[in-house]
Length: 197
Image (cartoon, rainbow, N blue to C red):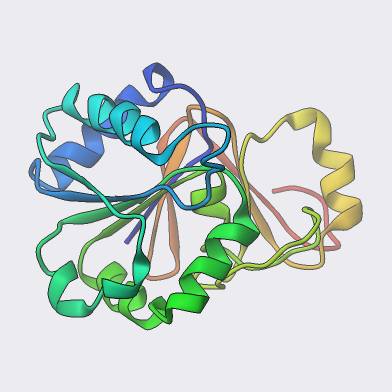
């Protein structure tokens, strides 16, 4: 299953993270920060931040991964979840495609949890026309719009050619076998060429 967060601060994600920790029974999490810009914040600093965030909800073991080439299915069996943080959607998508691990991630998601926040969530959706330079993995047959602001509804309606799921900072939802289940707060599905519903 996918756990999708609209973004925001660690404090704004506490309720989502508590559910996540309980769902995976406080198991091991693999953290992939490759959407981020290491010149802005090093991967080690991002890891410290994420590790502390998960420790607050009782997840004691978060493992940093910056080289995707060794993420075979056998290695991934040692984790209950994979967490992808924000940054550049294109950068993350290209890293996954270049390492040729998309199929391994598809198998993992069917059995365990992929938790994406912001760009780390958008990458698993499908290109929909809202963002510039959209390169997505299309695991989810919707576009995903994070950091959603209701003032942008008109712009979203004008630009999209695919249905999108909109989620605000601090809000989250589960996507499992094609079903959308709000977890914290609300999500909004906007249909392409139609009004919101």
